[in-house]
Length: 309
Image 1: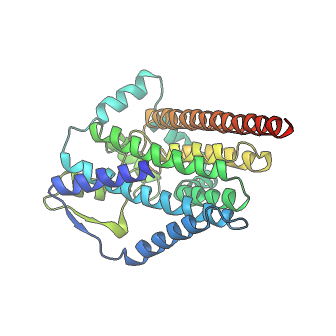
Image 2: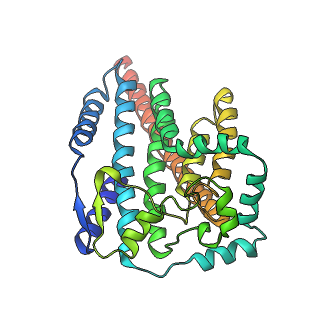
């Protein structure tokens, strides 16, 4: 809750101080829907037989709110007009011995079959994450469902804050025309119109119903991919397809999102930090629960002795 509120606060602050017009038109239905989900989650939170629905509604609503706030931050921060860092990110890739353009060219030479797998893997990343939230909640695995929601809110806010100082248009800046001609239309450049509107446009308008992420470094697609795999790490039957999907999705971040390889590494680092934090929070909570249970047992034992006496 605090992470989502922090994201909303940052988005409102940017909208207030930057010369950007905000249009909330078209969000009435989604606003009431999310409010209803939050109300249902709160009312049914402790009701036996309804906790799974409460978890599904609560995680969905908070992740959706955090996602909308993060998307707004990602677009609004471009209006700060900080220097682009594409040259630095490209240099980092090459310094590591990695060339995203060479990998993209290799993918092109594999034929249409690999793009047929990469395209849905990339385009439906967020939808797959939301489906996982609902599935875990309805299966009764509330710890992992809420861990995923917690990590989503934290990683998205972190990604957007890092991207404030490191705006970039992505690998497409360096792609030769011959390579772009072999790719699907607008490959590597799908978010450029929104990027240009807020980075160099005279009168940018933030339309809340069409918020689109424009972050290159770190890659939030990579973050979400690792979130999905972590969600299903305890279930072998779902872990295997999740890992296979992750491979094709990460490959698609090059031609699909125009990401540098260091974007993916940074995305992994952001995810790993928040996942480790979630495990720490879990351990602290378990220790507190065990301590409380032990105190209750000690009190019960003392009461029993007094009663016997």
